[in-house]
Image 1 (spheres, rainbow, N blue to C red):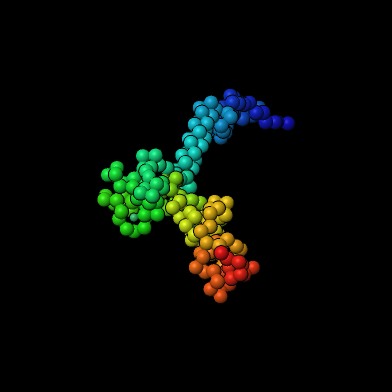
Image 2 (tube, rainbow, N blue to C red):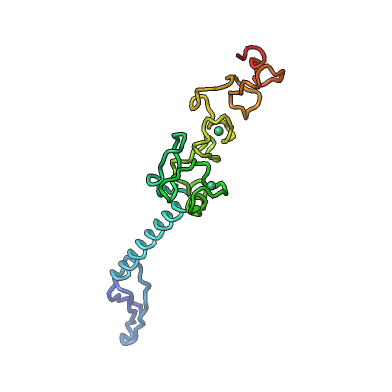
Length: 208
Ligand SMILES: [Ca+2]
Ligand SMILES: [Ca+2]
């Protein structure tokens, strides 16, 4: 009874031969698919390709972060200045004009070269602004300029820019207010006006 024998040649490589007893001259050679573990050259190619893919993924993530997530702090230090009210401002190209943060990207040209309205700073708000001029609200979906802190206006919508801790001084009357927009401090002009502003009516009873 005849049988087939298999004589692998170079098992680490990609071919092997099958021959028969009745006719050893007849043989069939098969090709075997090489993989990353069978061929040093192919393995090197696979490793190189993997490294390139990883580097490409890292480069892509860094690019996306720079564009969409990471604040671009360009000129944070070279643009620092003090306004006429001794507050932190934005220094124009002329190196003399110092504008308030909220004058950036307000669609009015305040710097002579118009850099306060340029795409560099207004292209992707608020990340494109110098980070030191931006206040991130508690709800994280909102932001405002730092010169909007403690100005008795609820710019964040959640009063985090007007919180008692941040703004301990109330020039009016401090109470838990009826209108959320008042953020716990109402102007004295609204005391004793026969309109309730405080939950406990203190604006109409004990406001001094
Ligand atoms: Ca402006
Ligand atoms: Ca405010």
